[in-house]
Amino acid sequence: MSLARRYLLANLLILLVAGLAVGIWIGDQLERSIIERTASVTALYVESIIEPSVASMADGGELTAEEVGTLDQHLASSTLSDRVRSLRLWSADGRVVYSPNADLIGQRFPVEGHLAEAWAGEVTAGMDDLGGAENAWERARWERLLEVYIPVRERGSDRIIAVAEFYLPPREIDEQVAAARLAVRAVHVADDVAGYVVALARATRESPLVRLGASPRASLALQRAAQASAALDGRDFVVPDDVQALAEPVLAHRLLLARDTALAGQTAGSVLRDLLREVPVPAEPGESGPAA
Image (cartoon, rainbow, N blue to C red; front, top):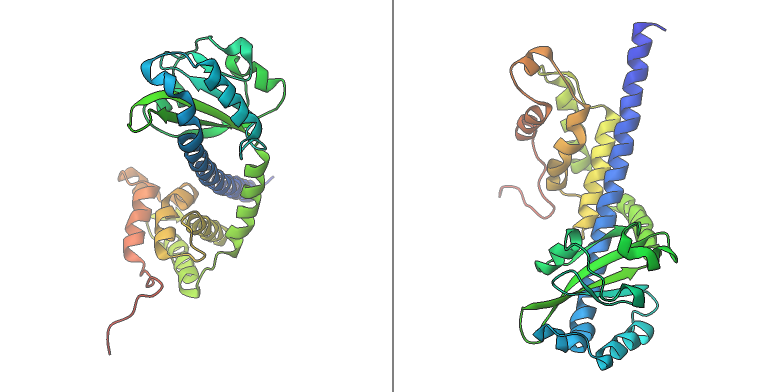
């Protein structure tokens, strides 16, 4: 095989891998946004339903039989009963004080990761493959679940008295991510913004600092990433800020710098930042030009 052919095949492979990476990034960002929204809704449920049911933990005590019965009832008949697969309550020392798995109650585990973040006051969430020792009961029933950790506060104060750990089915998240992917493609890209994307890519190809610039395929990847950014921001149109924020993470790894540029200590990122300052930026939607 000739050197030129090997070079062409290598570049095609780089383009395929880069395109896959952008697609994965968009999917990850959409999933993270949807997971965070789901966690926020679940936190409201904890505040209104769970907190009043665990008042005895405010004094460092155990749950009463009445409180356990109330939690059982919530888990079986609440508005989230068709979505919540499991609920766990944790004490500050890493002890499980409530679980549908009676064998788990009283066991102690390290306070780390999402659990530690929740004790610090953060609502955290993520997909869990249920590989932990504390997940044997869930692992026997499901392959993976959405795990949400939420601080439980004493009524009328900000003091955290427990952490609630919810497990929700991932199907709804997966469906929302699939729908969001379709919605991203419907995000409007105005002609001047699309032209701006093309101009940035062209500037990398024409720059004497760059040996191999961003291809038309790279500009398409940047436009799709900007559409995802707009969708995550709740907009159905792309603005230049979306493009500027993503130009470096999407394009930098696609550039091959000239030898002298690299020897001078410049990076693809620094070259792109300079080009972003040089390429004219279109006006934001609604901006007006100078008065006549």
